[in-house]
Length: 455
Image (tube, rainbow, N blue to C red):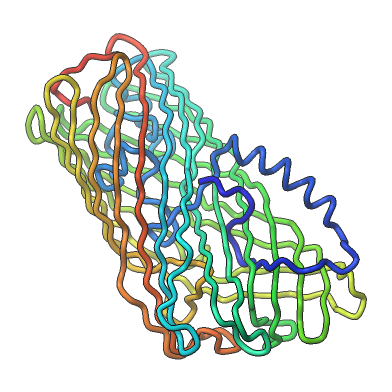
């Protein structure tokens, strides 16, 4: 998704004068460069299992995000690289995008049934896979599997009463290079490695949580970004001609991000150099693809996300204040998220001429406990339903998909956050995702148009 200036982590942002302008020209220049990189990397903001998108292409979104047991699309490079060795052609090129439309609602004693500004994000994806021999296949791709974003206009807490802008944006994008090895025609192993890029921006009223100056009300404007090396590994096995199983591990993305923060308090203002730790969770998944008939396929993936280790807290260090009356600050924003297990179900029906219809369903619990929920990281999503349609056009396989994600109303009586900003609040989140993918097979299977689905 590409709203390329604000992203994940704990940041809040308000258009404030930067006393002394410390670090601003350098930061703006860096933003321009990173914004260009972001355009190339297809940075996205996604909301689903916590803030992990349930599928990164029209293929997978249409069938409920299931992909670990498949080898029919370019997204396998991200989901299970072992499947590259099982594609039924010499190679594959895929280009696509997912548009995400958000609908968030928030309520508390000072803000009754406030609807956040609807946001539309675009998440591009691109992949190229090539078999070099019967045993070896290689691939490269860009994916945007996670993120969040919201904008609310709310009455702020004292001393920042009256209308205030609460804005956030967070994203994770990956540039992956992968390889797979197939020792026989049924078993494949695969792995990927590459850089992950994460941005984070938050803006709005925020009460410091400590350990430095807990309880101090502020208006924060924080922007950070950084890179980290990530990897994955997977295996896929063709148990029978109609049954395939797969398993994959995705490493965590622990990014030491840097940037700047502007702080406005009742005691004055200052800008800071900022270091923040942004951690996206590791995951382990297993999946099965079962061909019922020559036309019908069912699938199921079960994926565990390690949210408790990744979103325990956001750790932020503020140094080199432009206002010498301000001290350095260390801030730990508590999240206390819980691990989730995502169960994804998919169905496909293949017609003659390469046409296919898809449907899917996803369930996982909300990873965020009620007492640490804020408007900055909307994550109260629990279920999703999807539909998809694909057809052949000349030498291209075109696929469309739609997914609706929703959850329960979350009531927060006593917030665990110092300051009580979210006491007696209610959160409700839902999103709509529409996706399109263009896939071209390279080799003898290209444009086969057969009714029997490939793996």
